[in-house]
Image: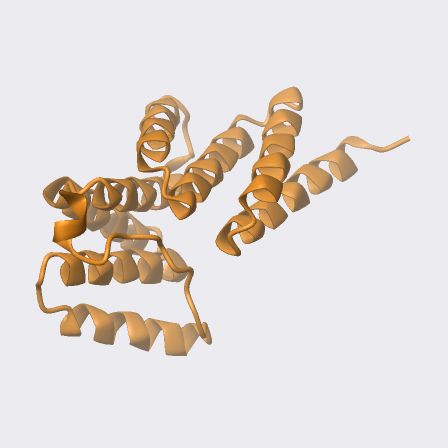
Length: 181
């Protein structure tokens, strides 16, 4: 018989593997594993884990370029997270994913607000990797909107070196603003 801790570890592993597969572009497999993790956490009453998995599903949708669906998922998850004490650690991720979805939709000012909030929250939480992802997203936004990103890039690159990270996930974004028309 499988004990509860083993079931939780299996659900966690499915979630992590689903996230990895989404970042590799293997969306069908990612969707299946993330759904499995979500269902298991929901069965176990693990509300925090359910919300985290919903954030990862939204992130996967952004990687697929399904910005509208990602934005809907993020907004619903943010609303749920607001009613759940202790889930603040997800806010930087959710705001970053929200910002990326808004970028994909060409809503740059809203994207900047969400990404700035993601960065602010990640810094408050001392979540260095999430800081890097927010900075990386702000660099992408700056490039799309024709702004200089050198200062942001220097900060991002310094943190990447300190963490020993060699690459961050590629986010499918339009090559320029003209693609959004």
